[in-house]
Image 1 (cartoon, rainbow, N blue to C red):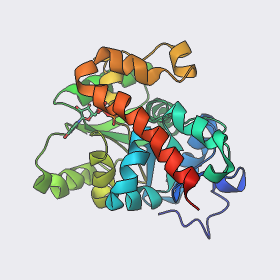
Image 2 (tube, rainbow, N blue to C red):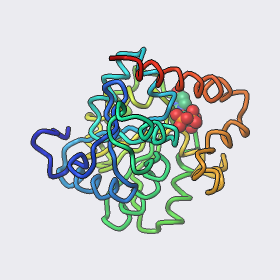
Image 3 (cartoon, protein in one colour):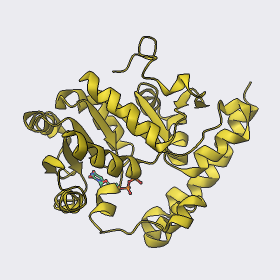
Image 4 (cartoon, rainbow, N blue to C red):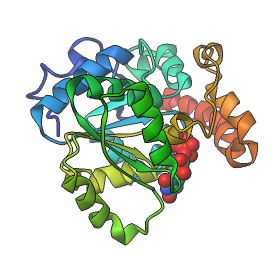
Length: 262
Ligand code: UDP
């Protein structure tokens, strides 16, 4: 893992102050800076883990000590949701003002492009059976030089995790994308990521479904306006109403609690 004391040359923290939500550091960098930093991480050949956070993950981490530890010990933590970037700018109490959000899905596709250029081998783990394979076909159409060493779905029984990790290790992948939803993917990466012997792993949530073309992403203007959540909610209201409607309200209360805390 990246030791932030000794690896300052790698750290974006020396460029801009990170945001801080209740002891969880959110790194302050742009999308392209993130890809350059990840390239340096991969060059070390040691295992690194990146997580992206949105409002609901931060609220969850307030109560879930295990999730909190996993976020705090990740090598790179970025804001997936616009609301996290906005909140960072609201008060000095939340640390530095985040210059941008760095989403899981953009990091996923940008890293696949970089992987195709550099010859890194990637593995796709997660989503329903067949989805990772479909995403792989779409990625290889976009980036013909991309080497995908394997795909597996994300609905295996928990005790099979060491076998899944060993399978990934046997393919000698450099980069692992884990799309099993939160916080399941974060827990899986923290516990089994090092066993995959990859140099970098990233939790990407529902990104395989998007890349496979099963779920449409919000138009650019909605992404920029911070309305991507509304687009997702409109597509899957039954599954997501609790997460977004209650989640956004809970995030406001969470921020108020942090502002009131001494
Ligand atoms: N998923 C999985 N294993 C599970 C539960 C979910 O692989 O045990 C997949 C699911 O099929 C979907 C993704 O994880 O592709 C979760 O998507 P969601 O939109 O909930 O993720 P988010 O990005 O919002 O965390």
